[in-house]
Image (cartoon, rainbow, N blue to C red; front, top):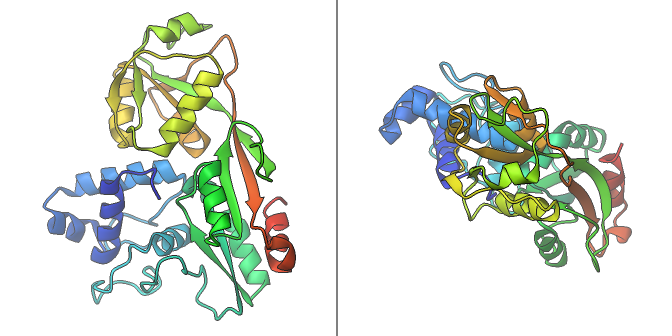
Length: 307
């Protein structure tokens, strides 16, 4: 999984191993507030909660357990007082079932982590109704190139990916669209404007994810297609709390879509710009492996996720 920062992923792993915010903070030599900040930032990026409660002995949510399994971040050195219902056993990479029940057939699903958050309930329902099937996750796929590689190499039976249109030469189907929006803090000069033009945007500094983050490239491609050019970045960070702080201080514009955009839209002191032209939406598309037609369960899950 590449979208969150490595530091956030490491802290998530340390939290699972430590079992509490205080113990994790002591292990890493930082404050409990620092731990809570990084976990909160990671949850914003993923679009779902990882822990039920950050006080006392922490418990993973069902989505948190599945995410930890899929990222293979769990350690064999979990503390003795760690709740077994909160921390799953460590499992090998590329083969981590979402349920502990024995399975006669495994379906490999590749998708960006925020998309997994979109249909995690559907996956659980499918497994509950099909006890002979286990679903494993690969959360590293982002683009059509990622999806094509995963399906061709047999690392996935079903792949979801982001695109701006139907890719040429690669069979996929449209799932849904996630609007791209631009966000500023209430202190920004454009915050109260009734209409913001491309000329206004070109002279306004931007806040961006780090350059290695694939989500940044997806956003930049969408902006380019919409003929929108923002000013130079004044902040490049995967730390969403740093981005939110800069937004509220009026330092620039941040482009987002999906779960991250929904979360930003609910934040006090942050609002969506009212543009004079609509930005291109980000498509979420589904593709199946070359042998899907030979596997009824794969086609059944692919259809079920569209219900």
